[in-house]
Image 1 (cartoon, rainbow, N blue to C red):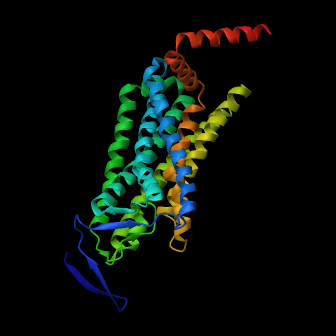
Image 2 (image 1 turned 90 degrees about the vertical axis):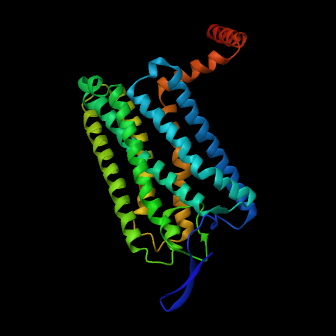
Image 3 (image 1 turned 90 degrees about the horizontal axis):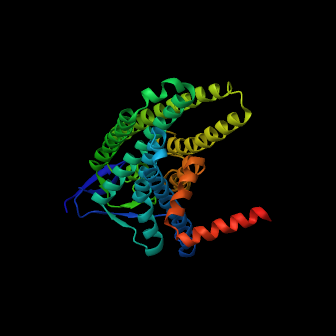
Length: 339
């Protein structure tokens, strides 16, 4: 492999051209094996909840005709995205924690980076689309059925995915062109943008400023439009006369906003805020929120708290249970009513 010597701030340093044979070492979280076991168990449980919860939502919406509406189409799209989003990061993270398999090839690292940014950006766009759908349903109910039809819903989701792919290509292509030092130790638990930039020996300013502008545009524009949608929703809710309806709508919007703010807040901290003075451990801790925790919260907040989804899931479970079990359950409920 060809090597070159350069001088950086008066010090000689070697770096190598990128080839398919080069590898990175993912340092992960802790060097303590016992602590890593506890992290493995925690992340594995969250991973199982994330995948199972999102699969339940997708199955419920697919099998229940009453849920074939734009809102649940968007929820299904988000669930589908979350499964692939968490699959991009968590399986490799679990392997690193348990098996100490902490090496990743250069093409593998760039591929992980591409899919991570793609799914992350697509989630921003889908959260915006869902906020717009909720705004139309609450603030413009007379126009909702005519504007948010099947064709429009499909176009909004397809547009989110296409824009997300284009967003993911830019940083992946920019970072793939950089020259990296002999030290290939990525001080993170996956191939993320900041730790990869820190490993480069060349001039990273053009790449850094390009990714900063991209992050600024994607995150702040999506967040601003999402918050504006919820602002109009809150204003409309104040005009609802029924206290129960107002309380239920506020509860739903509050839960949605909590997820949105956690997701955007941690992403802005990592990719837009001046984080150079923060420790690597703090960066890893913050990254856990948008890579591991938020994908697990979304099915709970957006769908499993929804009464219609819970009823649909219950119907599906009863459909697959043995008939004698359902009869026994019905008999027990009937007896309890007479007690």
